[in-house]
Length: 99
Image 1 (cartoon, one colour):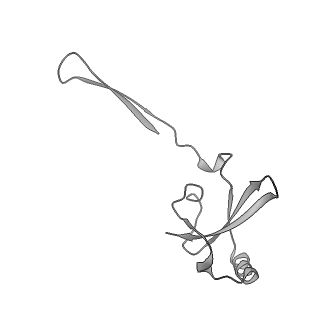
Image 2 (cartoon, one colour):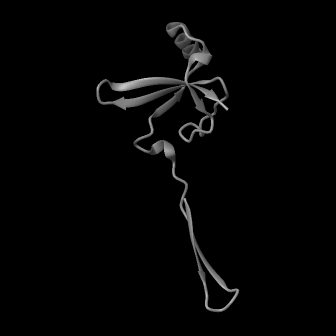
Image 3 (cartoon, rainbow, N blue to C red):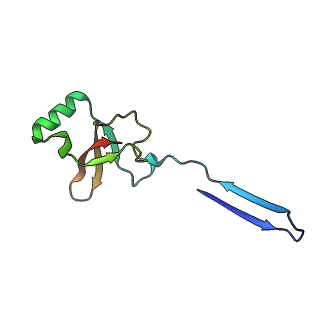
């Protein structure tokens, strides 16, 4: 986050600029961000076989998503998203990576 304040002095063409640059925070540590895990090749094949779906049938998530941009991912990888749920304790979702 960036903000700046520019004050114009009484003398012409003299500017005073104060800039505060916020530190980059790790978005993955926020309590609202669910856990993201990359599936192994074996887990991926088992998921597709168990649910009898194709890779294209899975919902998408962008490689640029702040929650996963720190991971070493390639397009067509699958991510397991584990969210906390009040009713079931944990809810598991799967997403395929797209550019």
